[in-house]
Image 1 (tube, one colour):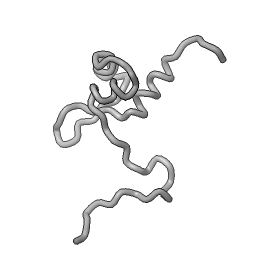
Image 2 (cartoon, rainbow, N blue to C red):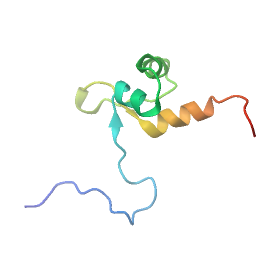
Image 3 (cartoon, one colour):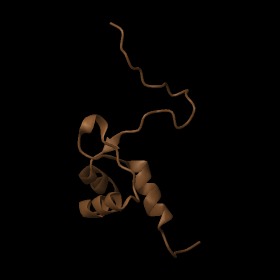
Image 4 (spheres, rainbow, N blue to C red):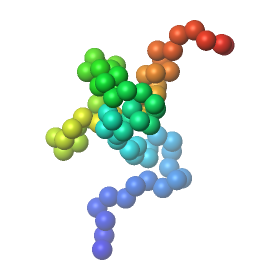
Length: 77
């Protein structure tokens, strides 16, 4: 049987492997935040969302973490 899609191997260039999409709740649990915080950031456009096959809105965990890192203020340098 031939598969119509094959995920890239580990020898592919970085960034070419598909990333898992998370619901707002799953993303919040993974980073230790509240679901409404992820939802609010997505609604304001700070975090991009994806709707594959007209389903619920999903986010990439790397983009959520990148948003948090970009909004960090102060702290030790």
